Image 1 (cartoon, helix red, strand yellow):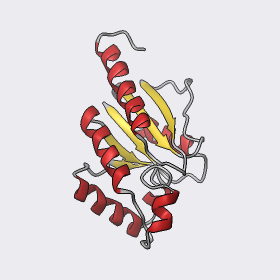
Image 2: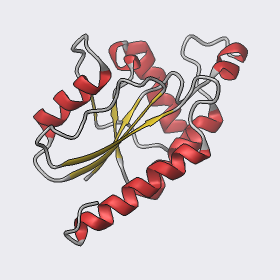
Image 3: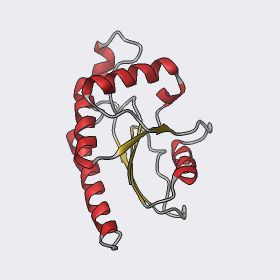
Length: 160
């Protein structure tokens, strides 16, 4: 199983998008196209880890944008524990993972790493964007490479 833990602000938008957009939930078309490329290239499923998950209007806007861009809607959201995002991701994994998982977390913050000592059958790679650019082709390629190389090693019984 391949999972993408996805933040929105600073990933699916950036400062330029925010300065040009009058919407309360601004998203960048190029960022959404890059997300579609990542999902299509890896067949990963999205778990929404963004604070957007907490607000029905924001989730609704995001769902519409995903549908307009042909991106499968997220399968779940991480819980709101009031702690660092990595703790929320790890909590979600502990409740939901029963099979080996290869996962990527994409966020503009540095608090998404879950560490290596979690005892779960999970290979996790945190990838950091920055608010000036959001999701970039280089980050998409890094995620694709992680999913393909790690998943291939798992299938061959090698791990990474």
